[in-house]
Picture: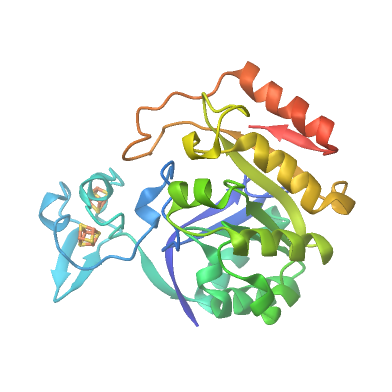
Length: 287
Ligand code: SF4
Ligand code: SF4
């Protein structure tokens, strides 16, 4: 079973607990206005625009396929910046066993693996195969997901997944739709399901500057306080079982209407944390 792999980080300490190998798949089912790695959103359509602009001559076209010569590439990322399709020519379609072969070299140094993206939920069969191999080797297996693929429909994947790090990007459906282009009913379904089966590791919320609880939801880009209150109410019996991660928006890598947006202040982040404490969250992290 193959997946489009954007990159692999052999040793990561920011993609779940301990030291882990992180695998980033290509392709996403939503398009967040604040996406900080927009080049993972879509698959290459072979338009060829990046090919002639590669300063190292690392790219060539074969029909509609872009060929990337990793040995020649200087990793300048110019190809990513000029791609109008939110894609990357540096993506490889890889079998789960081949990804596992690379990960297994890190076994002495890692506690587990995390599959992120893009959206990991777009490749359930691939990840099931990969996690089965990793689990047999004693590694913990985590997903990092935007929550827009219904995990209840993938029991085989869930059987080999230890925990999920779940984005809850907005609570009001209209706010969520404006931010991502999609509906958030599946996110809430996943939130409930993962909490109930004990597979929720953390809920992540990207926090923007200048959004407050007062005012109607139609004026908001992210309803952060509603997310905090909403998650606390929705999965209240399980608040001791997972972490709330409040992510400070940073515009690095962002394209489009939020690319010049400033970050919230530490004071704004601390106020959100205070609200989370009041709502009953036990473990809250600001990053
Ligand atoms: S990162 Fe892209 S543009 Fe830069 S050398 Fe590699 S293939 Fe070429
Ligand atoms: S990576 Fe982007 S610019 Fe390059 S061929 Fe693919 S779609 Fe076109």
